Image (tube, rainbow, N blue to C red; front, side, top):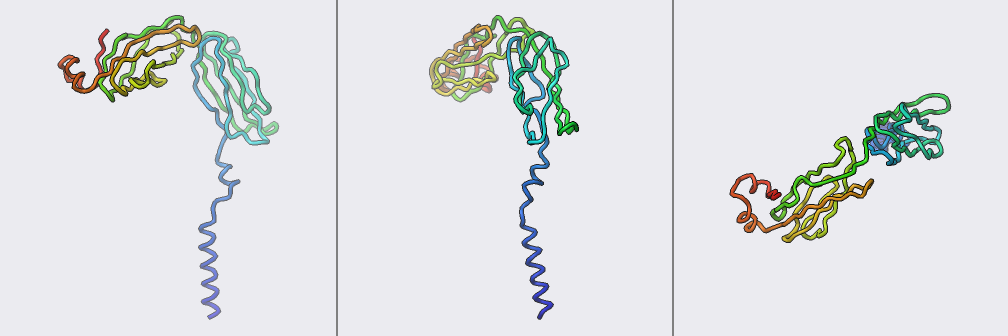
Length: 222
C-alpha cells in the first residue's frame, strides 16, 4: 500500500510539473534588440525616428553614420532607445547601431538609408478611369525628377463611390463619380484623376467588348 501511495504521489507531481508555464525571464531572454526598419528611402529635408526594440534596462544603443553628408543623427534619447535621423544630401549611407552592456558589445544593428531629391511635379498616367462596382485597380503616377523616391498621399473626394489606400489601389464601392488626388507633401504638388463607377450591366455595355475588361472590371479612358 505504501509503495502504491508513493507511486501515485510521484505521478501527480510529474503531471503538475508538465503543466507549469515557462518562467517569464526565460521567455524574455529569447527577444533580441532589433531596429524598427532595416531599409529606408528618404527625400532631402525629411526626418525619421529610428527605434530599437527590446532594449533592456542595463543596455544602451550607440549610433554612428557612414556618411554624415547624407544623413545626420539628431535628438537621441537616454540609452538610445530611439533617435531622429534627418536627410541632408542625395546619396546612400548606413546607420550603425551598437548595443552595449557597459563596455561589452552585445549586438550590432544596421539600417541602410537612400536619400533622393524632393519631387517637384506629379501626374497620373491616366486621368479618367471607368470601373465596375467591387472592382479594384492600382493607379500609376509619374514623379519628377525620376530619381525621387517620394511617395504621394492619396485621397478620394467621395469615399462612398471609391476609396484608395496608401499604395494607390482604388476599390470601387458604389455607383457614381469621384476625384482621386495625389499630393507630394514636400512641395504640395498635386495631380487628379476622375473615377466613374458603374453597376455590372452598365459597365459591360459601356466597356469595349474584350474579355480583359470584364476580368479586371476597369477601363482606362485617357
